[in-house]
Image (cartoon, rainbow, N blue to C red; front, side, top):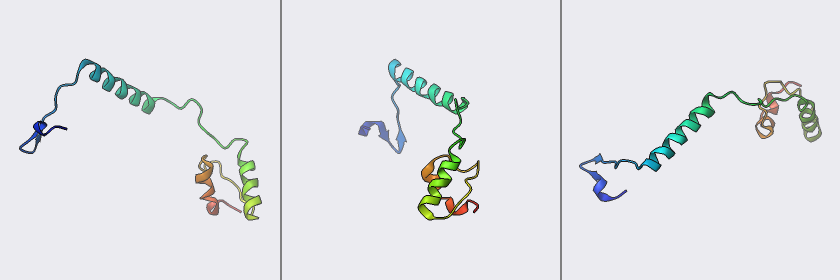
Length: 86
């Protein structure tokens, strides 16, 4: 930002070019589409819960039941294994 854009504590913003305006509009539209769109396929534990439970048992020696609502990210789920039922 150049010194002539800020004076007396006020910010002066120059008008955006046509290309800049189009880029901003496209970015906002993409963001809004992502926020309102339904996920194509929600990630679930289907067919993976038992595999993950087996890995927990193999590493810790303790059997745990992986709940259906457990985080599907394995790193996050691994950090919560102490909350899973035995």
